[in-house]
Length: 149
Image (cartoon, rainbow, N blue to C red; front, side, top):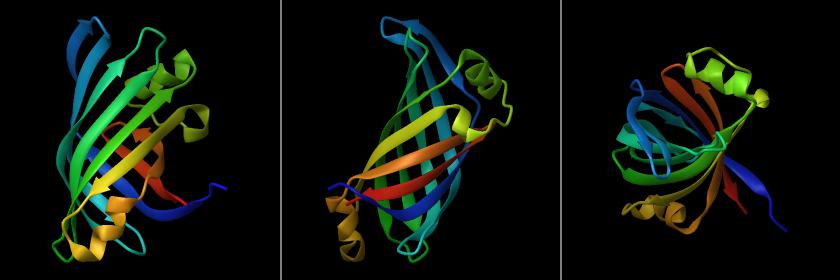
């Protein structure tokens, strides 16, 4: 049986969207991840810079591929690989695009995550899969992250 256990919350600060135009795969855009915080019972730290390479597919679904780091409060480092989907009614997605605050229950924003760390105290992260439920703000993302157990 599959269950979940909360591991941490991420609040990532973002730059404005950089648009790369319509490619054969959809509308390509990149959003730099500037920083932020991770808070949880087993891990606390800051978000290291990275980016989210997105494709908005012809069906309106944003296919998300984020790569960034975490530096824990005691100096350990973790690489984060996060792949997900965000979609919803056109008017909700348009409101998000304008930077408006939208109740997260009005759209779907989920990610699956894998981690890499060389720190022995964080070796457990190398052996788990995690799921994140997200909320988009104008220049930030909030993710509640759960270990799949």
